[in-house]
Image (cartoon, rainbow over all chains, first blue to last red; front, side, top):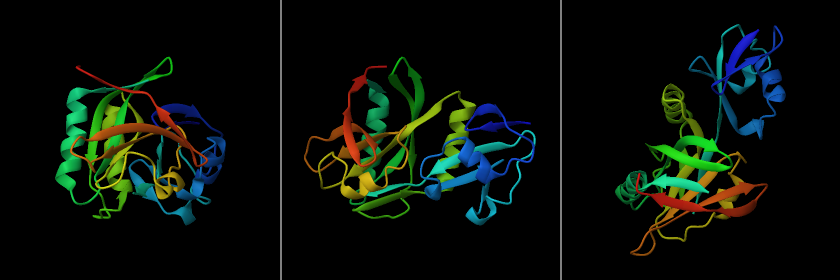
Length: 68
Length: 137
């Protein structure tokens, strides 16, 4: 199955969940990453149950913040 | 080496000054070639914290910028934020929240009359200064 991850076409196994994709992609600090699929944000609790579909467009958005 | 166009530097500077007394922030995008980073576009985002000591970029604003980057064939290279009254160096909070080791973290200090913009690689709390050149074009 082909999907787009962070702008790059990737082939992943059928029925891959978002949580599995996070693992496959070696996403750093996954607890601080917001996932969007086709421009829709995913609740963290949904990562384990959300199955990716052909053509899905996934972005990983790191928490960005700080202070002086 | 990181290359930043003069016009983009001025945009970052103006955004930082417009945000005073609060911190200002945004994203940098461009391309990588042979270990060098060329910033092609800067995204001036809202500091959701509206604070002189903290900044946060919303996922919505980030996604909107990322979509624009993809559309223009650019990739995310990192972010920038201002320090209104402290030097251009990552604070402990900056280090703790530097979660993406692929990112360049640029900090614009406005504490002196002469602004200072520097770029950092931060990984596991370790900070390395990145070479930054501001170019005419």
